[in-house]
Picture 1 (tube, rainbow, N blue to C red):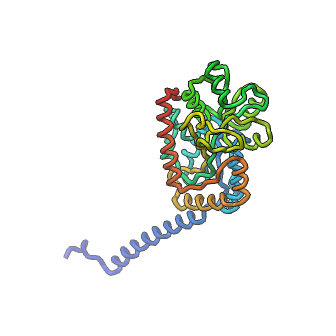
Picture 2 (cartoon, rainbow, N blue to C red; picture 1 turned 135 degrees about the vertical axis):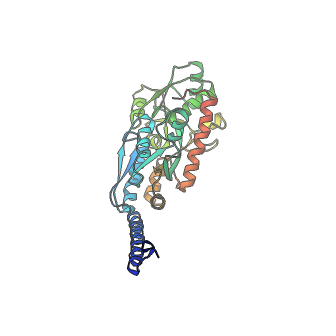
Picture 3 (tube, one colour; picture 1 turned 60 degrees about the vertical axis):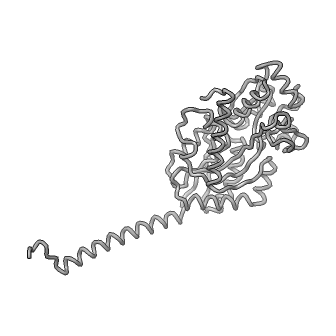
Length: 335
């Protein structure tokens, strides 16, 4: 018998021990990874906001950050990265390490950005790990208290009879406010000039200073101003017949079907471990059930509303498809 084919008992034992060692090391690595995942989070979490401090996204982010951090056992730190209609913050999260330590509070403008822009630096659906919606609310069209525009119908008459005489604001080109304004002009046959800002309180300040005519913004921004009589709300984008604010009509009362339900929600980076996404979803749901959080979101004109990750993803995907059709049908210039 060829000696090269003979394996001594000691040799066979060595091979067996070697294979066992590999299996043990692999098992330890798996257990270590699982433990690290179970231990998440072990350091502070960043929650990016794509708009300046003081705006609705910033307000909601700061409202939920503290209690969410308490439940997770690590601080949730809000970081403003304003610009490009929220795309700077979204891009940062799309390209972040998928470990659950960098999140973003996305607005519904994320969907309109995707519909408006040809060359986003990220995939607006597939580059994110969707966690949950936080709140939903209509948009509002507001004027300063002493504005000569007396009502929503008066505004429509003015933009039809005096094209480009009047202005309306948004928190950035391609945001929900901008796209809704374009949709309204197309439906009404009017023409108004769009004035974009980077978010924050700039639209409100410009409105109250009389340098713009109409502010299209979220209910979360407008409701406190409305209650303090600092603005007059001409209309909301709620469904027809729904008075989202006392005595305020819906755009759909005049233009059936012109309804826009805005939202804010949390997402992470594609590839974030499912256990981390599930933990975030579970703790965020608990935060949204806190009486103080629910009351504040309601006071701001919102409706606290959690979702499953799949529901959130499907909502965004469906909205992008719908808004893309509007951009095409209304011949709105994509950027």
